[in-house]
Image (cartoon, rainbow, N blue to C red; front, side, top):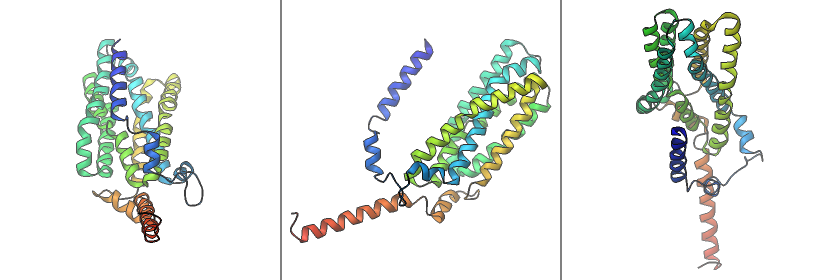
Length: 271
């Protein structure tokens, strides 16, 4: 019943908040649905390397998040020799940490710049994961799990924000939608892989796999343009010409409409 009530609240808030964000409103704000070459925007988004970097980034991130959240109870029971109730509390701490990290660090991320902030969070996560793996104490593992969730929290929204800054506005829906859907596959692939390996080698393989995925995520993050200074993403977008293409097209369209309107008025077609 609590889940049904929360779902109803979520539905009401979403409908109220996005009632005017209809397909017609989006098409009116973004009238061009095809590129200059006649290709669809989805095809154009898939040809952009930023889309694929963000998609693979989210794939690995979701894999780490769900693998840790799903296998943490088993790890704490079998490897850390904990009680069932205590192991459940560790998992609760992990998800609470992720929730609070997503809320609190969201304000910090915008102030120091998304590129540097996410790279810093990933470096901290790797340190916490290494400590979690190498310090065989239940209490220490519980503390590291909570802080690991805290610093993992802002990675997903941070990646979405960076994608929207680096990609032109006309590609936001296609690129972000594809990256999020592709990334969701990590929730199926990596927990299954961890389970298959754990079946043969033991659940202790969870920590080195999670650490390897964090290293891969950081490497992917470093491939994004813009450097690590604040404002670097915007500068890279302007240099590529992507971030202003949408506005340029709208400005050109508006200029043409105004010019035609002035000509029609001078010719007496309009008052």
